[in-house]
Length: 169
Image 1 (cartoon, helix red, strand yellow):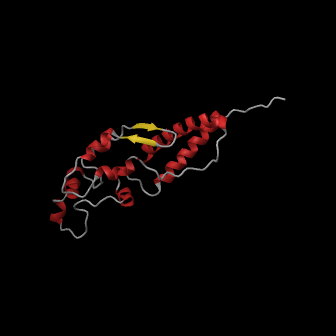
Image 2 (cartoon, rainbow, N blue to C red):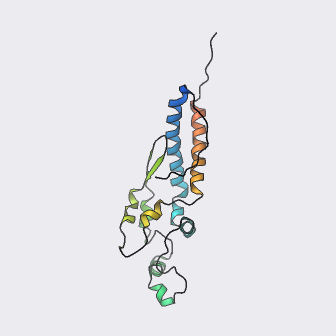
Image 3 (tube, rainbow, N blue to C red):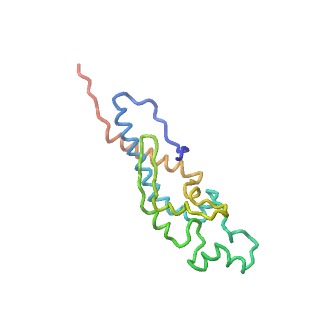
């Protein structure tokens, strides 16, 4: 669960708008989660995201290796067999599987469930790399982006549900 999402403070909600705010907030979190999945999911598999999020280095990424050592390392085997050096990806199967997502939201948070990411739970016990934890990590700028999407969606929901009340004399 990510708790560092920054959202705009709107102050106290009038009593008659509390239900609309709660329903709008739930919908807005779901919208922000879907936006993150659509726009930021594939970035988790890039080397720039790995550097920003602090992924553990893989065998073969350390400097000073000879050609022979590199090509027998994990990174070298990926390069030779699949033609890439991307983290969290070997054959590309898990990257394809995480295209499917289940989004569940409350009025306070969103949870993205990636059933295809269960392969990250299987790991070599002698390795320091924990891909399941790395897949869940956000870069320092992503919470603000998710919060911005939440604010945009919440503003639209509150505008959609706003009603004008007329006072009768």
